[in-house]
Image (cartoon, rainbow over all chains, first blue to last red):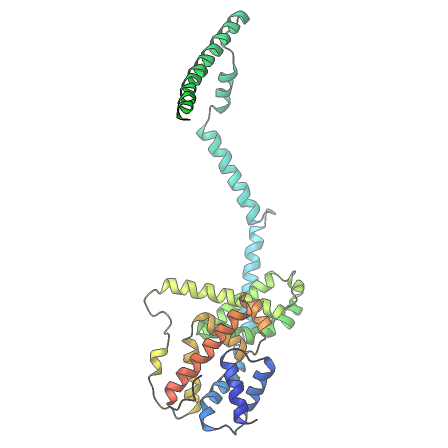
Length: 161
Length: 171
């Protein structure tokens, strides 16, 4: 390959635009000995890539280490699974317990209170009727008071326009 | 997947994974440790491994994630101490005589690149992987990949030219 062609390819290479085929050509070119001086640094760069791609993990006990790690991990999980529960199930159960515990501890009289609200204090139905009427009257009074205030605003609005 | 199949099909990826982790972490010992964890993770998912079309890329993705976790963890624990020597200052101009030296120098230049660029340069120029595969591994789109790759390649050229003194014309 002519060095002109190579330079064109390199230009594209440095822009990140070379295709796999073109990069293959460049690799092949720089593997040759016949490289002009000004392209020597690039050749070294490609040589580095080539060397680096051949590097191997030189550890003969690697497999054994992996298997040991896997064993350690799975025996750990098995212990956890003794009750047939996994971590996520246990955590759901724990948070439910916590919630219920809080509920009963913080409001021990929850059910009693509900009783006291709904239980009637008046035994005579007539009396109860009168009490209710009184209460409703009070509410309607308050409502009317509010309405009167609203009426004022309405009048004000009329004045404006 | 049985243990035998696992050892036969997955374990041979170890060299490639190791190179990748070493390039990201800069230390062969740490790389080996992380790669062991990658295999443990793969084994834990052995029942699902068949579903992945590209096991290779899947393993590389796990490796990438574990390496980044490791770097984060390390960064937190040695704040200000020695961080990773981002080697540019090691490259005071000098004329090396042996090719071996240059290889070390190039390695240091690459080590000095930002993580993302280093990762992409490694996958593309050292492993010769396609953009498609690198997209899967990094989750980045092709334009981002090209831009980062271009920056990484130019940076290597620039630093190398600084050392060599005789520059090829810069474009």
